[in-house]
Length: 401
Ligand SMILES: Cc1ncc(COP(=O)(O)O)c(C=O)c1O
Image (cartoon, rainbow, N blue to C red; front, side):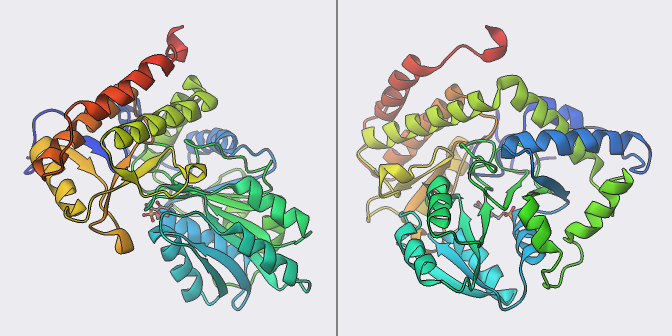
């Protein structure tokens, strides 16, 4: 019995975990299997090949860890770096803050470049640090591609250009947890050394799989990196890859079949179409926010995120009350403001297996809630702005043309 039952479907608009498509749910609804039978390695082989496509890499080596994004972070760091290594990391919101905390607890010497929440990474400061670092003491640059707490997307191609400009050999480590498979992400083109994501975000799977992809340079670095690692050691995985059995310990069989189904759906839609859909969802949401007369937490257009929008509320409103009411009255789940922006923003997650009409339902709900909490919004204004844009921009569904 579901003790928090509400009629109809819950409108899940937190920026992860996101909606799981029916096809994926059905694919996962199966018994356990012997992972040492020939079937599981055969399935794993296709997954490792196909997962490279969502990172846009041909030379990278993927690892499917039974973990979350936080574990994927740890895997990226401990396999490539040694305690005491100097790394540059950008603090722009709650998730970059948590990653930095992990970096410090793993005993790296973290050079933090901080921005106001709502702003992107200060890449000019990175440039001056790299310029001054003629001895190449900086071993890695760590960046969160899409800061889920503030809805800020950083320009990774620019990070690569800066590294190249100073011919700096630092490894380029990227958290793509709320970007990969939703935003334009190009591991090979941008010379990313380790990229990672979590299953519960744009892949629209349950939580429980952290996907880490290592460049040849990162694999090379792992041979000398001295950080203590056991569960997340790439070496153990590589050993089993070579044996063709793939798993150093027990994988979640259900998640493997789920990943197969999730990738099939993404490829059927077309990765570029998936990315374009997220662009539409992001733009429609921003138009609604503007029509409501509210501000985006993201300070400049160049950083607007197409997977999450953090909406600033006027000081007389507590944004947590919006999130509470959404759930209690409308069966709508919105994201809370976190840490520095707690009470000041609420977040609309628009990523994963989601279509435009679902988003309009969410926007209609937000309008009613805004009215509930005393904000003078004209009901229908955001929905009208979003749907006017969407009506002009939604293409035919690729598989139905
Ligand atoms: C950008 C980003 N990185 C990392 C994480 C941490 O992932 P997890 O909660 O799966 O450990 C999150 C979680 O929301 C995130 O949004």
